[in-house]
Image 1 (cartoon, rainbow, N blue to C red):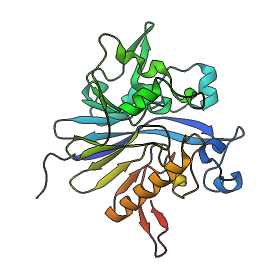
Image 2 (image 1 turned 90 degrees about the vertical axis):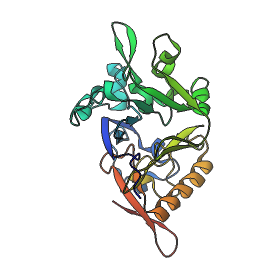
Image 3 (image 1 turned 180 degrees about the vertical axis):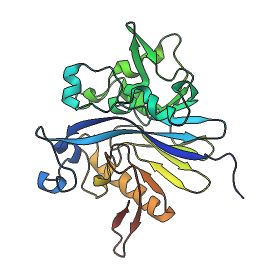
Image 4 (image 1 turned 135 degrees about the vertical axis):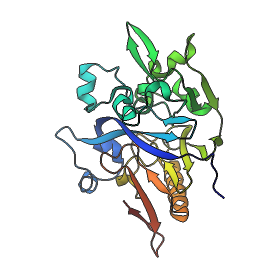
Length: 281
């Protein structure tokens, strides 16, 4: 019997394009190998997307992550190669007859600037919530870590992106601790290799199972075991978490959603006779 409470559909929404150093994105993998799949520009940056996800229910609209946002200087925009920006996902939402005010919930995988930067915008010198009618969700471990990161990853967290939650008039914030079903067919489970408390989203619709991967597997080029970002605080934990998720996705015929792949938004995976994971766009 079908469950009428499950999501009706999932829709990838690209908030912006940007670029990061290819060496940092592929860690120990030598450049001659990763450039076969992901070419770099003259500054060694690879092209990336900020791909958010709209999960639509009959009576609820849920947005996963909010992109890089607009509060960047011209110098920073050049450093990070920020472009093709859909401010507040206005165009993408309008294509589905929606506005930011129609979003009921915002689920944050984690608070790095390319995932949480779009939480607010500056208006007349004041930070204003981009999704004022939304309840926001984040893992406690990542909320705590974002307020006290190490010197190694402090540049990935910008306190102003999420500091406005502590002010009067901010939209509701739910800080959760551990795996949890947030809505029917929509559950989250924390990971710890990339940054403490990053949460992966598992979404079951009437017909498909989806995994929104955040930075566990940021692009389709990161499917193979050694392809782990230099940004990850605990790469061996990332390796284990990635293997577990890929084998779950292969076993369930689930669909992977890549948050940062500039071209391929989704793919399935399967295991060959040797147990090796194979990508099926």
